[in-house]
Image (cartoon, rainbow, N blue to C red; front, side, top):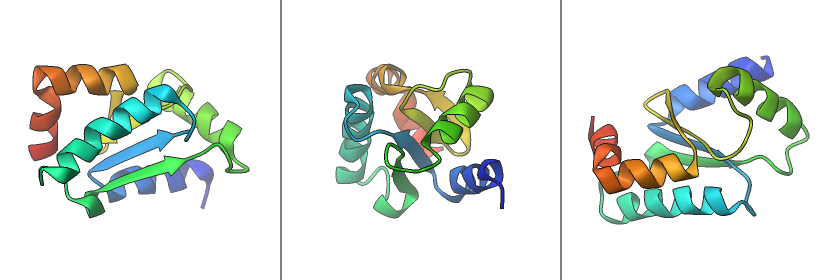
Length: 106
Protein backbone atom coordinates (compact mmCIF):
# COMPACT_ATOMS: atom_id res chain seq x y z
CA UNK A 1 0.00 0.00 0.00
CA UNK A 2 1.35 3.44 -0.90
CA UNK A 3 2.07 6.06 1.75
CA UNK A 4 -0.85 8.13 0.43
CA UNK A 5 -3.33 5.24 0.72
CA UNK A 6 -2.01 4.37 4.18
CA UNK A 7 -2.58 7.99 5.31
CA UNK A 8 -6.05 8.13 3.72
CA UNK A 9 -7.03 4.83 5.36
CA UNK A 10 -5.79 6.10 8.73
CA UNK A 11 -7.74 9.38 8.38
CA UNK A 12 -10.89 7.41 7.50
CA UNK A 13 -10.44 4.98 10.41
CA UNK A 14 -11.05 7.41 13.32
CA UNK A 15 -13.26 10.36 14.13
CA UNK A 16 -10.17 12.47 14.99
CA UNK A 17 -6.65 12.01 13.62
CA UNK A 18 -3.80 14.36 14.54
CA UNK A 19 -0.50 14.20 12.67
CA UNK A 20 1.93 15.63 15.20
CA UNK A 21 5.49 15.95 16.46
CA UNK A 22 5.88 15.34 20.18
CA UNK A 23 8.03 18.44 20.77
CA UNK A 24 5.80 20.87 18.81
CA UNK A 25 4.03 23.47 21.00
CA UNK A 26 1.16 23.88 18.48
CA UNK A 27 0.62 20.11 18.53
CA UNK A 28 0.58 20.16 22.34
CA UNK A 29 -2.08 22.89 22.23
CA UNK A 30 -4.31 20.87 19.90
CA UNK A 31 -3.86 17.61 21.83
CA UNK A 32 -4.72 19.37 25.12
CA UNK A 33 -8.05 20.51 23.63
CA UNK A 34 -8.93 16.97 22.48
CA UNK A 35 -7.95 15.52 25.88
CA UNK A 36 -10.57 17.80 27.44
CA UNK A 37 -13.23 16.31 25.14
CA UNK A 38 -12.12 12.76 25.98
CA UNK A 39 -12.28 13.58 29.70
CA UNK A 40 -15.84 14.94 29.42
CA UNK A 41 -17.03 12.04 27.24
CA UNK A 42 -17.70 14.09 24.07
CA UNK A 43 -14.95 12.14 22.27
CA UNK A 44 -14.31 8.46 22.97
CA UNK A 45 -10.63 7.56 23.39
CA UNK A 46 -10.88 4.89 20.67
CA UNK A 47 -12.18 7.49 18.18
CA UNK A 48 -9.04 9.61 18.57
CA UNK A 49 -5.48 8.95 17.45
CA UNK A 50 -2.32 11.01 17.46
CA UNK A 51 0.38 9.99 15.00
CA UNK A 52 3.77 11.32 16.09
CA UNK A 53 5.81 11.50 12.90
CA UNK A 54 9.22 12.86 13.93
CA UNK A 55 10.78 9.38 14.27
CA UNK A 56 8.99 7.88 11.27
CA UNK A 57 11.48 7.14 8.48
CA UNK A 58 8.85 8.56 6.11
CA UNK A 59 8.43 11.81 8.08
CA UNK A 60 9.44 14.03 5.13
CA UNK A 61 7.22 12.12 2.72
CA UNK A 62 4.28 12.35 5.16
CA UNK A 63 4.77 16.11 5.45
CA UNK A 64 5.09 16.41 1.67
CA UNK A 65 1.78 14.55 1.22
CA UNK A 66 0.15 16.76 3.88
CA UNK A 67 1.27 19.82 1.95
CA UNK A 68 -0.36 18.42 -1.19
CA UNK A 69 -3.53 17.41 0.71
CA UNK A 70 -3.96 20.39 3.07
CA UNK A 71 -1.87 23.22 1.65
CA UNK A 72 0.78 23.12 4.39
CA UNK A 73 3.33 20.63 5.67
CA UNK A 74 3.50 22.00 9.22
CA UNK A 75 2.14 20.05 12.17
CA UNK A 76 -0.31 19.48 13.59
CA UNK A 77 -2.52 18.48 10.72
CA UNK A 78 -5.92 17.73 12.30
CA UNK A 79 -8.71 15.75 10.64
CA UNK A 80 -12.24 15.30 12.00
CA UNK A 81 -14.61 12.87 10.28
CA UNK A 82 -12.15 12.65 7.38
CA UNK A 83 -11.99 16.41 6.79
CA UNK A 84 -8.96 18.61 7.41
CA UNK A 85 -9.88 21.28 9.98
CA UNK A 86 -6.52 23.01 10.41
CA UNK A 87 -3.60 23.19 12.81
CA UNK A 88 -3.09 24.00 16.49
CA UNK A 89 -4.39 27.57 16.47
CA UNK A 90 -7.39 26.48 14.35
CA UNK A 91 -8.30 23.79 16.90
CA UNK A 92 -8.06 26.28 19.79
CA UNK A 93 -10.11 28.85 17.86
CA UNK A 94 -12.80 26.31 16.86
CA UNK A 95 -12.91 25.13 20.48
CA UNK A 96 -13.44 28.71 21.74
CA UNK A 97 -16.23 29.36 19.23
CA UNK A 98 -18.05 26.07 19.98
CA UNK A 99 -17.51 24.85 16.41
CA UNK A 100 -15.18 22.05 17.51
CA UNK A 101 -17.74 20.50 19.83
CA UNK A 102 -20.30 20.59 16.98
CA UNK A 103 -17.82 18.84 14.67
CA UNK A 104 -17.14 16.19 17.31
CA UNK A 105 -20.82 15.49 17.97
CA UNK A 106 -21.86 15.55 14.28
